[in-house]
Length: 182
Image (cartoon, rainbow, N blue to C red; front, side):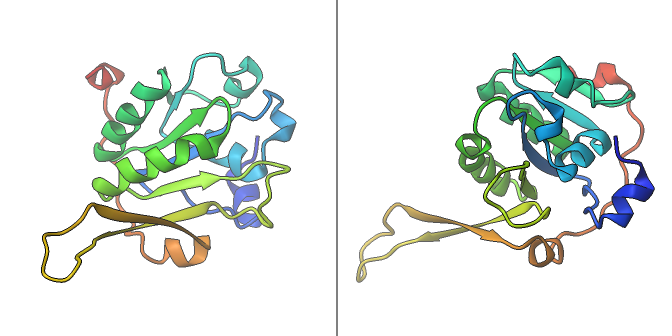
């Protein structure tokens, strides 16, 4: 596990409050997680994970982090609820992170929640920066006709560009875990 000082030395980004970070559990071997993935898992306030995540990956989570198992369909609802409540949230997924990224990005963008995808070792990303997804939604008009269905484009932006747009927020008040059930 990386200490705070090691995270700073490596230049790993701070997880912003009221944000969602998507991490793929890879093949269950913690050595296949990037240092950014380990940092993200160890510093999040809450981790919502799919059933069947390897215990070796879940062992990276340290109390007092909140942890909850949720089906893929329920996981996105939970991460949005927790992010709206001011938490730094990780959605830990089994299988390909990109399969979950589009729905997560759209649902978070509808609520103005920053959403990041954390690359793992071996992913075709050149560095340890999380991918920021900028969601561009534009209604299309043809002549003077009514707007057509919305056109959506996801653009991967370098973390340095995306992080400049994130507003730093204060840590939420410490809440009892019993308040998270709903």
